[in-house]
Length: 134
Image (cartoon, rainbow, N blue to C red; front, side, top):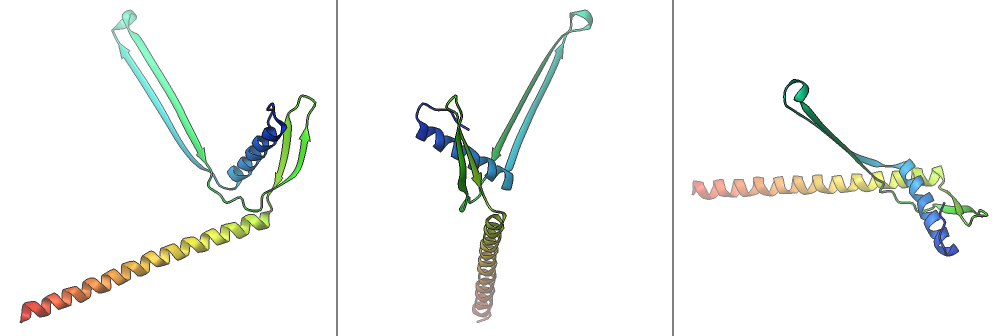
């Protein structure tokens, strides 16, 4: 939902928020941090205590939302724009499969580069030992 002075902006904001909700439902990385500080000084009735707590969390979703479509919009009497978006389970599955295949290709390329580097190092070692023997 969004309620802005311009209807077009309301729709853009509401749509972005809806897509964000879907993305968070599919994949979200959460980072949290809790700081807890306590301090006490003095003795007996003259003692004073200080306590400080801070909690911070960040949610980040990095998902391709290709295929996410606006299926319904509604404008309430107060001007609030509501947008419903749909993202098919099949599309989500296909995107996940494609992402996994890309990751496998990257890992294979890194492994092949590693093996090639090992081969060149072995060759260099062999050549160095041949030169040392002469």
